[in-house]
Length: 69
Image 1 (cartoon, rainbow, N blue to C red):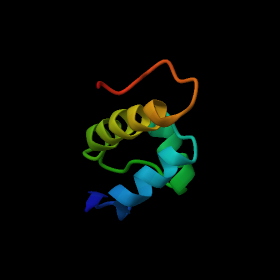
Image 2 (cartoon, helix red, strand yellow):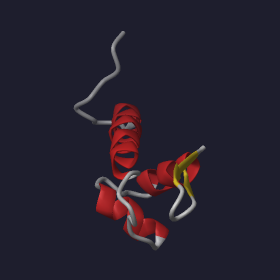
Image 3 (cartoon, rainbow, N blue to C red):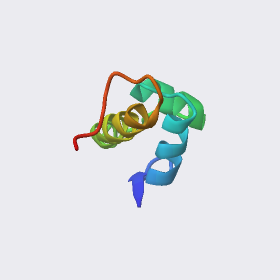
């Protein structure tokens, strides 16, 4: 699904950027080589950041975040 129509960014691309280390919205856009245009996508990117980063942190050895039993 498209997250940003202005730049043609999909959820998959955002998830890939997060998987490659982006932890802030600016980092996601930098990884994708663009910048927000109208800004309507920023809340969606932030939501994906929170969800994806939390999932990655739960799966990393030594992480302080753990998934609920």
